Image 1: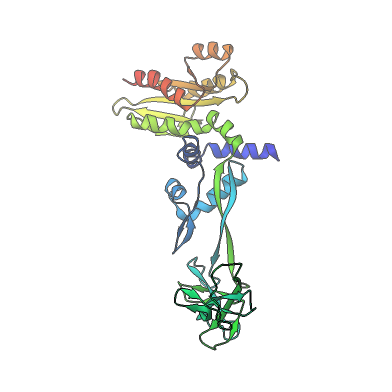
Image 2: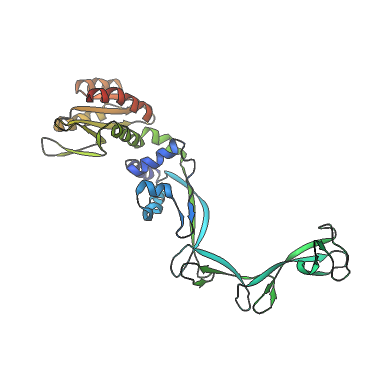
Length: 329
């Protein structure tokens, strides 16, 4: 089960939208993703909607990241939706249990400790003072002279009194009334980045997004992932391809190789060489996180592949700035 979740995360790391959201957590821009309430649509996640460009898919996107263990969710709130029209613009009404009117008056019950008289607070009030209607003593000190004994409600429609009202829901959108039995109650979550992902992500596909943004800011046309056709007619996939120039368009391809615990082996170098031999780009780079072994370095030099060793995205971008930008001039 754990291995399956890791494999699912590995696929999601390749998704641009996932990379952007994770980077917001890693950069400190987000500590916790909390929903925002809108009276018309209920809770939603504007940050996620801006990333994926589709408000209707935000919940599904977050749920997918949660199931894969990328995000950790906790219950933030519960929201009621109208069973008739689905709107979240629903209010709670406290109604009379006899005539169902919501025009009720809520009062506090007060008991005079000395004489035992109990009535609603309005009957004790004499200006700014509380005076017992039975013995006419002034009640000055709570819990000594008097105590609050609960609440008491009076219906302004049928004039009946009761202690516990009936709760109903009123939809402001379609004006339908519904009971608790009919209510649609949905869980709303806040999200944070899983600690395990904090260890995985800096050395994974999340590196691609800031690199892509960096290259675009420096005038490159970027594809990620990039599918390039080779001389053989076969399509080869690279983690990123950067294009520059119009008359003589130069192509640089970049692959990413990571190892969480140990250094990267020579295998990614061999795999990249097999692709560039057929595609023949102007430049080929392998970003090795955190480092590559000596055999890999020797093979990369032999195959004319430039290796960038980096512990994180900042180091990778700095190295690309020194190498790729210099070669593109």
